[in-house]
Image (tube, rainbow, N blue to C red; front, side):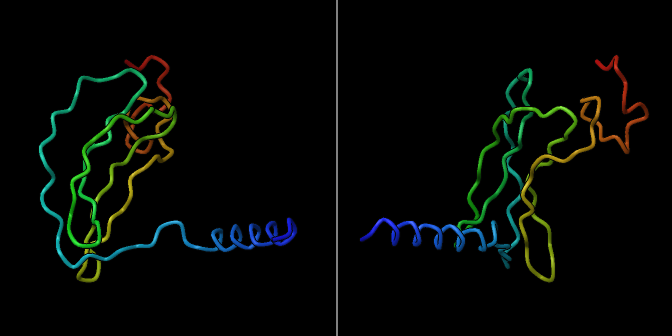
Length: 120
């Protein structure tokens, strides 16, 4: 195989991967079980606790335990959740969303003082 053929194949593969959707939405016909009770460890400075949640492995629900996620100033963390749509269940992945300028954990739209420099 020539170097040129190898590089051409590599470019083709990378373009094909780029065109694929990042996450296919899976609809599950069985409702997820109730969330498990988790013992949340003591707070860690600079981190946010991401609650555990149920994941679908293609055949059944599997519990994924909670874990610490490094905090991001000016953002709030939303946990994974399952929502019912058109007779099935769809997992909405959690992640970071803008909207907490002062880092107090209250979204700006609900915060009486969103820019409070003296937050606790």
